Image: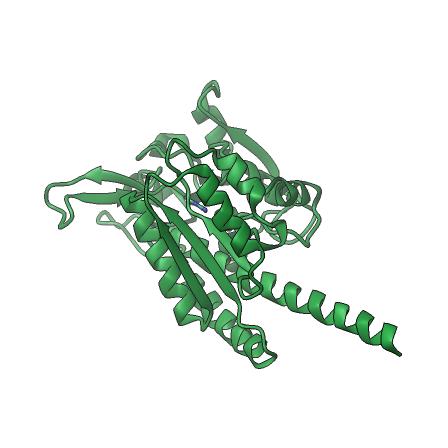
Length: 316
Ligand code: GUN
């Protein structure tokens, strides 16, 4: 148990970087086994334009693929790319048998409609879990789809940190399609790391603090620096901070630093466990992307061998 400068007990830090590392090491073994059977998992990432934060994420995905022995392809397109050109690119990847996962980095430039692009991705290669087919499968608890990587990573963090979610009051701040809504769907299912009572708060929620103070587990994904303060949580709460906000800081080497949606120093003494920013949820997102891609490749290999079985059966 860490203690603060006045001897007070501090919440245990959930080390997302270490948990993600363990997952990636295990995946590297699975990649090796798949490769030995002739299938090297392949992930294609499309980056349109030059948003600096997106460029950083895409570079880390590239490194993670290479390190796990996967086939990583990054397609960088100019900010002026038309929707038609991007859709052509997605369709070519749908038809490419060496690619098992496709991710189009968001946000996209204004001339491109993200929903049209997401719907163009083959749902069996949609390792982001954004296609309506995968969103529907997640909601009804069908497990052969893909769950979005950030909420899947949060659930894995809770499980790996020994947090029992069954019957707990979990309060989410944020209702995005990437985090809040799929997070709620994951936590509602009838299995390990779920079975919770879930509340989703958003910008029109009246008296946010009244909800967050009831939370056994609080998950902040609002994209607002230090939105959650000490007076908004109860003693013993588990806090998961999904926020990654750049705030200017002249003393930092890059002129900015990353802060979460939670005032970490103020909230930690009240929490039983808490994720830091960075090195909390962020590394888990990439680990889950790798996991989804390896699973996509394994499912592809299983479909191919089932088809071969049918073909051989027909010949006999
Ligand atoms: N931009 C921010 N988060 C994500 C993500 O999880 N997937 C994609 N494709 N773009 C993002």
